[in-house]
Amino acid sequence: MSLKNTSEKYGSVTKFLHWAIFLLFVTQYFLVYRREYFPKNSPEKLQYILLHVSIGVVVLIMALFMITWRYANSRPLMPTSMSYFEIISAKLVHYSLYAMMVVQPISGIVMSQLSGHHVNFFGWFDLPTLFAQNKYLGKLIFDIHVWGSYLIIGLVSIHVLAALFHHFVRRDSVLKRMLPFN
Image 1: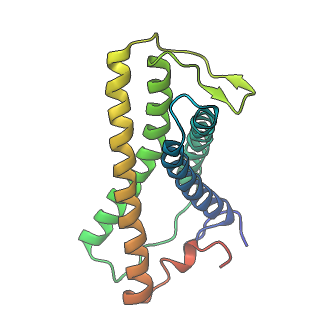
Image 2 (image 1 turned 180 degrees about the horizontal axis):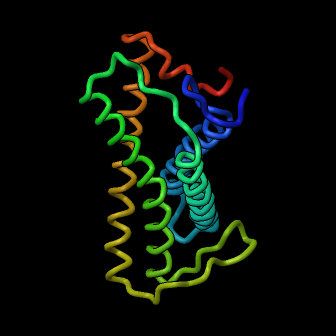
């Protein structure tokens, strides 16, 4: 399997980044919703939050690498059966997903700092604090972060449904060319 993309399918680097970021986002949702089962200010709840923050930093790093890799690499061609509207829609969803892979972790980092918390990376070090505490702005960014999570769920749902549509209705190679072991 080639590291780089070809005109027919994605290379192993793109596939790894695609599926790893997807799994990390799923993990993020699990951590956020699972922490609600613990009492407020409990050590377990804090551990879930700290892990959520650290994984968010990993997602940001991987997303920036993925975006760089995307533009330094070729991409498989769109199926010729796709209409202009479908091509524009696919591009819009993809660009929106790329944007949210960057905006969501950054909003989490900014929200934490505005709320007066250090952003710690797996207990190894703190990210530089760039923002002074501001509870009002922190709440505003928190709302953006929450709504961003809903937007990601919607975009990923559209993305998955489109891939399944291509696989089961169109019977083209759109889904197969992104599968990890294909």
